[in-house]
Length: 185
Image (tube, rainbow, N blue to C red; front, side):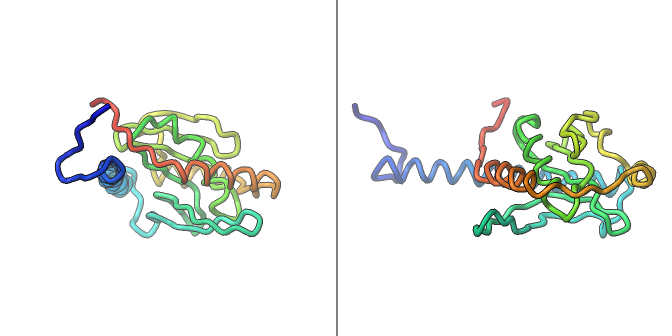
């Protein structure tokens, strides 16, 4: 069976590689825009100060003797305590819930109490301890005032070591998946 290659390509492998790179670059650009929009939203609408917002926090994940890297898109801290982890996504939010919860469970020495998945237009807030949805919509992201009230009632809990290993594996499995599908086109 004959197929026509895109202009400028001599073989199928090079064409596929170039097309995949183009799609990944476009998705990364869109994801970067979502991160910027969320940061602006947190500063302007939710009352956080810039020092309370960590962006693109890369951290090491140790599983056995293997060292891997992972990243949290945004982490909100108050009084030096990380309290909300935000995972930005350009696809179906529900597909990234488990990744956000796993990241919130292993990023620090304690489980970050809240995980949020957002595409900049919608959001899902999750209780990290249970993994259950708390609320949906951009208003699901607590304001600084709301979070300040919540931290009085929150106990920061460690994750048992045997559970931490499982969560690290879940996180790294998601990190290895690069989903570049754009919905609605």
